[in-house]
Length: 412
Image (cartoon, rainbow, N blue to C red):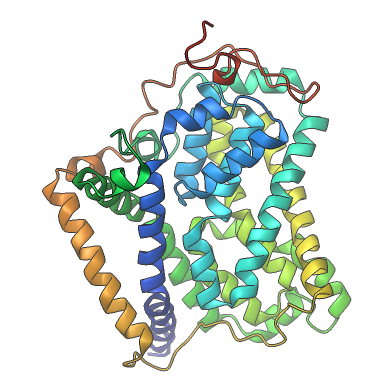
């Protein structure tokens, strides 16, 4: 019965990590739901019509305020591109929505330490800048036009229905007035439940994989894979191998944080952890979706661009944090607790579970259940194709066909 003991050990580790991060997940998704409830989708599209630095900063901000589900982020990025947003801005939005969200930062701080949260929020913008530069220098108009033609076919990927849903509060008035209304509570409950439904699969798979890896993979394997006996080589190798491990893990979004904790304890470099977490946008299932959305050539271009900038961001994080002495000296990520005890974690889990139950109750009572059946539906019907072109000329010009080319109230 050795295999039963091994299975039980893996499940115990996965359960322990789940209990450790449960309250933080609920808090993160709750805060995200509040933000998403007040940020209108039409505003996002209108402001992302070019690839200027200010536009990319706005795209990053909107990404931070959006869904943390990688599949939904990828689907929404295509929707933005089809309805007039710059492709570069859409990709900046996509990167930010999976790597710079509140819930990811909370879970990283809880499992691994605040340094890793800070590293994500330093490395994320570096990656976005790198992607923007690579797109500006290397992305050709012919490839972009072909990608737009493929995107306009509207082929379904994953979480299309979730990406198409706009559950923002439509009431007029100040932000505080809108948030105090019952419509706000309903909108927050809908977004909260839909966000959980979108990422629960990846979170569960990530925890199970992390538990299995922590329980079954010997330390000697990680020592050889990450060159732990060679400090300099380990720092060079970490950001290169991190995205590869992520690509092969099939786990995206917040689900890859538990595995990142296992890899850190196993010996991967600090920059390697950052690059691993950034790589949730190039896992194999998402590469298949890129191919369906934009064509094979653009999928390969995205893969190469994202991988190169993930590695560069990993190196930058390693150098910056190493120079400032902020890299943790020990490798003590919270992978396994002896048992569930009555402490602040248990108290917070109970409090936030009660809050989650309240939001779920509001979701059901307000007729939200049918929305769950539409999560994996077809792309939004209002994603009408636009004859627009990515702009690679001097900053300040607006791309033809983009919403920004014709401000509201002015004739097109």
